[in-house]
Image (tube, helix red, strand yellow):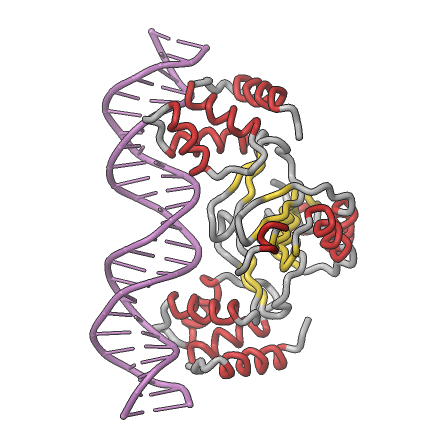
Length: 147
Length: 147
DNA sequence: ATATGTGCAAATGGTTTGCAGTGAG
DNA sequence: CTCACTGCAAACCATTTGCACATAT
């Protein structure tokens, strides 16, 4: 995992460079994303920020998250049905394993992805810019639970 | 591409087995999905069906598509922002290349995906059941167009 | 001082649902 | 003849937007 301090500093730096202001609510969101390892949703971030800033609105969380997304300082994991989850630690595309039992999302090391991307490019003639690779299944804990 | 006739017959067979009725609207949807190679959206299917059955509603299209999805006779490509697209030709998970210029979706051959899935499983301990692998970029035509 | 950010509420858009009437089996 | 299906409209839910007020710079 990337050093949270570095990520936070980097996020602040990039937002300032783009002329954005650093409000207390916004800083709270950055801190959560910089250190989080559990791919939080906007709703989760919202609940956490509200512990310190009870008047914060969902729109503000979306605002900040979208700022970071546009600046490529957070990676959005967008699903069709459920709400998006965010990765502030490794803000570049990488594969994810998603547990359909408990919703846990983990980032495995994946050496063979690069080869797959090359194969896709040569097969299709596409100029690939990014990807979204999700593997769904049951994590170890959920395999042990009775369904 | 799989023989459309076989796919249509298979879809009809499976729905009948599950005790579902074959209405004219429903048959029209099956035909579109069985032969389509362009991963249509519900909206696209809807417009096409309405050419023959002008009173058809969107809900009916969703109904039929969901029936097929539950029966694993169609693959849903679900995106966070835009609407889902459907693959009735190869109704099992496989990688896709999506053009961010024109929206074209193609199914390349991809030998190295299996290895990636294995790597994910051994890295995470997950029991992988399915996956969703999207590569985004520009198709050949869109690479040539001025942005 | 002055935009930018905030909080609220309303709007959006894809998808689902409830229900009375219709039609496939 | 019956029960699943249709069409319509309303409901849903995550996310976005409009706007008056507040505040970081």
